[in-house]
Amino acid sequence: MMNRLVIRISQNFMGAFLGALLASNFAQAQVSATGGGFFKNPVSCISTTISNCNLVTTPSGSSSGSCVSGYTGTCSYSCFRKTWTASANSCAPASCTLPWGGTLANGSSVTAYSSTAPVGAACSTVSQTRTCSTGTLSGSYTNSTCSSGCAAGTTSNCSYTAAAHNGASGSCVSGYTGSCSYRCNNGTRSVVSNSCAVPTGTWVNGGSSGAQCTNNVAPSGTCSPIGKTCYILYGNCGGGPCIYNFRCQ
Image 1 (cartoon, one colour):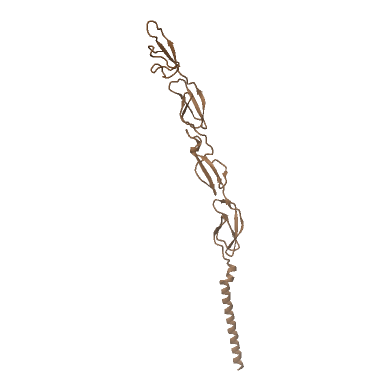
Image 2 (spheres, helix red, strand yellow):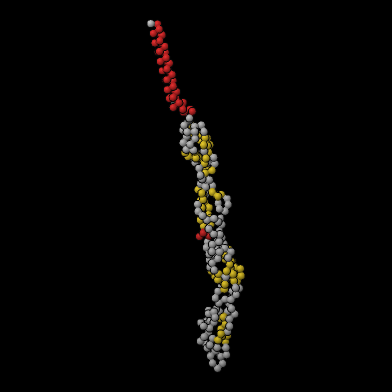
């Protein structure tokens, strides 16, 4: 009887021991799969963008951060249990580099020109507003300054063609002899030389008294160029009508 009791107690003890051992292994497996695994393999923070800072997928306890395109500065965010926390962030909109040198602040604008010397045109006809937006400069014109051209015209009996800045041209108008030149200086003409003058006229026989100067203007067909000032030279009136002579001036 005693032996059976000892055997049964031994069996019960072994069963309890094995049961406890199995329960312990199951609990450890569960801890490893849940709470215990969390501490061995912390949950990462997923990639995202916060306040213009690019963040890549990062394990808990680590940091990440770089400014997005178009922004300059630095940034750093730390990850803890799926949550990003800012450590530092100085990301700011980038300025723009100007084609003629220097920079333009974000949000600012500047006038640029496609040509520095448009022929016969004002600078406003070749201008463009370029605006900086987070490091990108709008438009395409590349000149910072412009000198206006000059339109065609006539000054002091000198006729000149349309010209670009610093361009010069000129020729005397019909009925004038000599030479001339006018230079374009940023939209304004200035004389280089001008010797245009009315040519010395020749005496023209005006015929009888019916052809004569009227208000010092020569009659049509008698003075070239027609319409210029006319001076009268009286001829011999004896024995017939007076003869009038005209001279262009």
